[in-house]
Length: 214
Image 1 (cartoon, one colour):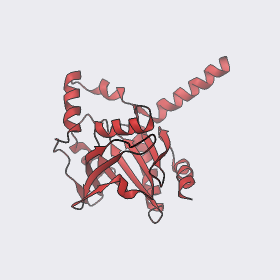
Image 2 (tube, helix red, strand yellow):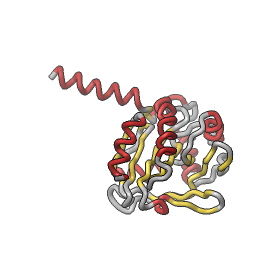
Image 3 (cartoon, helix red, strand yellow):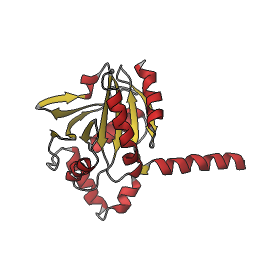
Image 4 (cartoon, helix red, strand yellow):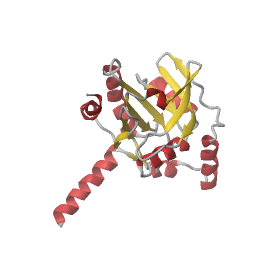
């Protein structure tokens, strides 16, 4: 019994060290609960104008325009963004292996794995592969995402997400998203093949991705 408890403690400790719980955002926030709900609803309706689509210099940052719920169990939800004047959707990438990384600017484990994610994106750019980072659970003004990326450039596309994105992926995966980073590996058929909670290193990510590329 003691051995089982020790193993459980190790798993819990690992989760704490490699991910950030959504509750930590709420503790940092000084707004009231109803004000947070209003902010989420505003975000959900895409009325915020704080983020402007940008594809210049070291930044590829775009705002999620619309989200469609999953069409079935483990089917990745479809969402849209505008890039270089044209609307793009996740479904447009069907036939590729897609890594979707949900992250937040305040999350240490998210930030620590970003250099490895950038290296993977560069190494696999000529493969049938696409990487998307989606910023969620943001309590600061969305403009801070752009400021963060100016200081911490990445080689892959970043999308400014909203609660609708969180809800759609939660429904598709069958469980709520409560921590970041949470990473989804979507196979070539558009199904969520792997859900990874917490940070990982380059070698671990590549091992998982290559299962679906090959």
